Length: 355
Ligand code: MG
Image 1 (cartoon, rainbow, N blue to C red):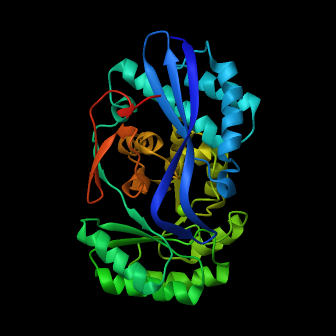
Image 2 (cartoon, rainbow, N blue to C red):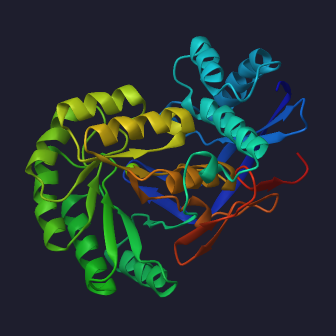
């Protein structure tokens, strides 16, 4: 099989409400959508969702790098995923969001050719799972009210963004727990917003409120701090911004710096490196989460298939398309109150109009 054509375009999406996390306010996002055609008539779709202060990619750098990859990858075999990564890694360090776009499109092609939905191509058997939904930072009252709305829609796992100001953050999480009761699972992501000392104080409160896990409390550049928190904490501590690539996972596991790792296709470069991060984590008795960036159903559903396939990836944080919409990229999955069901169509199961 050979790649005959690669098309690249930008796509824009807006959030319903501004989305505030500890280090930024997000109003919407742009992605780069990719289409790969082959000499067997099978087409694959991929997507890059860059987040500058996490991956170093911008939408414009994605377009430039993708164009460079395009010129080298036409004529290559999309089923030879190791070779595809080797070519891309040989050309540019980093630019993981662009690498993820090509990786996803190749997996879409490979699973379509096998006649299997991607989760089954990857060895999975169950297309149904539950994802959390993420709550941005607002006032304690607003966040509690918003949590009640999601709960009323049937969501049972809520991921709460904190990390702005410790006292205020503790007011937020207390107000939320009081509002939603004990049956809702709460996860907290501080997005690097606290110091080690603050994280240790916060953890005592989170523990009393039955919070399930604490994600990335301190700076990505402070794995020693993460380790200190992880060793002292009674709730699991998860690395997100601290872990991009398989080698980061290996280092964090060797240090015993965290209890779990949040994998994102955009941070690591796609499904192939994500599988390796999960394998490293599993061999070191660490669980994985699977998260997302600003993405349409293309990259989001690809991640869902990976989640459905891997036993050691136990926590799904794959909610981006629950609150952002697009009328020309469709399909992928059905969602009912956070319970996701993947389609049985071969590949990722996406339709892209006019591209
Ligand atoms: Mg995170």
